[in-house]
Structures are given as C-alpha cells and as structure tokens.
Image (spheres, one colour):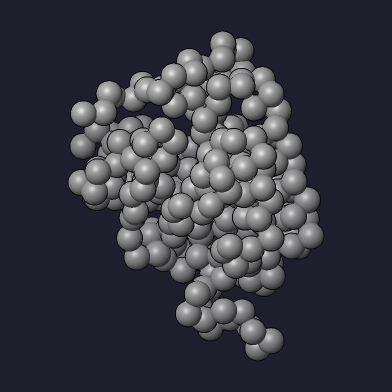
Length: 222
C-alpha cells in the first residue's frame, strides 16, 4: 500500500519542503485581488501569476504544488457586462500560459478562472444565453488540465456565474488524490463529504473572501 502523504506547506520564511516520494511541497499564494475590466488586463495579470510561480519555485526548488485563490486571474466582478466581456474558454489563452509555466517549472498548479464561457451556450455576437461558470483547474507538471471544476453554489444575488453540477477527484502530484471547490461551496458540508466519499485525500478550497472562516471550519469538521 502507498505510504501516507505528509503536508509540507511552503510559505515565505519557511525552509524548503522535504523532497521525497511521500511529501507534497505546497505553496498557497496570498494573491491580492486585482480590479480588471478587459481580457487584455486579464492576460497581463495571468503573466504576473506565472512570474509569481517562477519566484516560488526559485525560492523552494522542491515545490510540487502551487495554489492560487478564487478570482485571482480575472479579479472580482459584479458588473454583468464586464463579467461577460472577460469570459474565456477552457482551455484557452489564459490556461495556456499557466500550462506552459507548470511544464517549464515542473510543478502542478491550481488556478481560478471566474468567467468560463458556458459550454452549451457560448458567447455570440448576440450575447450569452447562459452566464459563464466560475471555474478552477488543476494543471499537472506536463501542462495538462487534469481537473476542471465549476462552482456549484454561487453567492446569490451578487455573484453572476452559472452553477456547476458536481465535484471531481483525480490523482495529483505524487499520486495524491485531489478535489477542487470554490468560495461558497465551502459552507456546505455535503460538498466536502462528496469529495471525501469519492476518495479525495486533499480538498483544495479556493476562496476570494474570508468573512466566514469560523463557519467553514465547522463545516469541514462535520
């Protein structure tokens, strides 16, 4: 049987995580939420995210996994027109940048894309028939998107995204079984339980707001 994996968070001021077959060196990035109004600004921001990845890998050569918070790529948006204007496909140019960085640095990454064009009703010259998803992706060290998650519980009525339909589990760095969830999903014990019952050993909860930490801790313990 596989040996249990040990958590080894890599944050500024800590030593390099252990480079072993049973340790996943992880960097959880505290990324300032940008204010972006166009796809061009989103792409520039994604390039800054890639530069943050390079700096983290240079500081911690044994780094295996880097995680960015919800809304870090597209910024926080509550304007419908702006939200639709910034929507992108997955895969697309933004994930292309992240994939190239992961492959170049030989690390895995979790990235947020608040505004994935709805797959059944994409944007057209007449607008969108359904709003975009709020999505997160897990990209492996070869640049492949191995998990794509769509937020199931957007905050109503302020959040504009279309809800996703389920959780996923896949093998992550060194075989660690991983699930992704986003924001408001963390308030519902059923979401965590669903991931765990599917075999997740690590549930990555990407979030842009931290106003309900006590509630989320309690939900995670339930």
